[in-house]
Amino acid sequence: MPRFQKGQPPGPGRPPGSLNKSTLLLDQLASEATEKIVLSVQERAEKGDMYAAAILLARTWPRRRGRPVRLDLPSVADTGGLVAAQAVMIAAMAEGEISPDEAASVASVLEMQRRAIEINDHAHQIAELRAEVRKLNKS
Image (tube, rainbow, N blue to C red):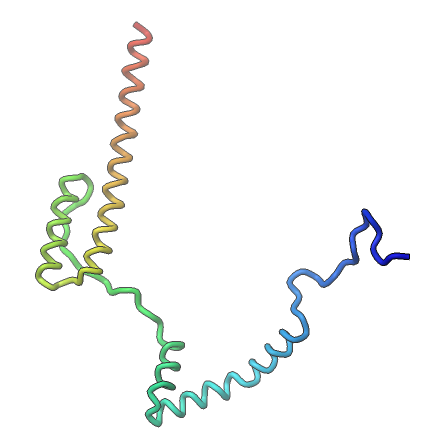
């Protein structure tokens, strides 16, 4: 008699999310050795091994993705303010107060604000046009 019959699902198999034996063994070995390895790398770093220091710092010191940028920007509630804000940002970059990458990040935020203003303006224009169409249809 065949092991699997047509139309019948196979056995239950391994429960979802369960790990195989080799993974469990590797996890156990790693958990036992991790502390020793970290201490060994730390000792080598303290003795001046720059590679060990780089490994240690890369895993313990959080990477920064930029720094806070302080700019005295005008209100960006309307497009006129956005133009003035762009000018302030470009001047700060030209003076070396912020890097070109930081200026690009600020410009990206200003562009998102411009889009939000544009979408808001379009929504108001559409509402006004619909009101005018309703008026004309009633007449």
